[in-house]
Length: 326
Ligand code: ASP
Image 1 (cartoon, rainbow, N blue to C red):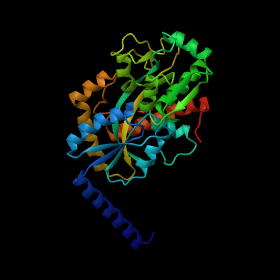
Image 2: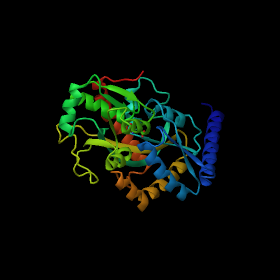
Image 3: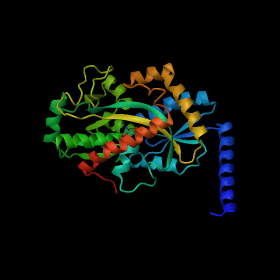
Image 4: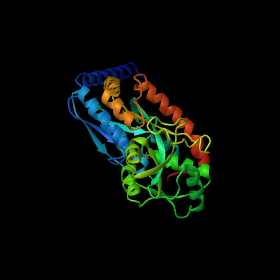
């Protein structure tokens, strides 16, 4: 590079930094859109709306949730990746951000290079549930029933890349029983059909199932964490019920489009940390079987580390299952 070209590049970089920090200083000046890549009324949406309300109070601007469901969360993630990197579009996504990186042969974005990080939000247990009149009464009898009725039983999920898809995939692998799956744009609408008896079984976050289980509108067989849950002490873990190593926790994080200034991500992280410490959020999450991430986890660095580790963790599992979306 010639001296004048080098200087021009340096000036351009300085101008960009100045523009970015000017943007960050007054941020936020207007409402922010939070993309939730699943349907309204589902568990990811529930987490998003809870956090959005409290973050809005701290930021002094409304965070409006926009549900962009489809293709296991990848449609919403693609929309966020293509948005202006100005802090006015943020994405709340879950473990699917990591699994879709392997599940999809091609994605309309680059998982590790199309986003900046704000922080972790929560890690939510899953439950294996059915319509309330499904015959089996416990997890052992469900396993036998699933094997006997593999051709007719239907399992809902929110598309390839969704947590419900991952859980279903592991369930089929562990039971060596392929099932008919029915994809929705989110497990909110799937839950409506489960309650209505149009679908047989599903695996979904407690943020979507806890109230239905408590209300007796669906039947619960097992939880996907290694420990039983405080809210459902009688519900066994899948591990203790015979599926060794069966464990999923659905961690959620907030991302921004690549190029969003660090000051903006840090401001969002500060608002997130405050929201997660809010007693209402702690209480509501507790009722739903989860708890907020700590202040140390609700940081850009912690989310980046988590995403990288989780891509590496699930890659061999998905490759072994041989499940891919084209
Ligand atoms: N629980 C869903 C999933 O399977 C997504 C949702 O609708 O929140 O990932």
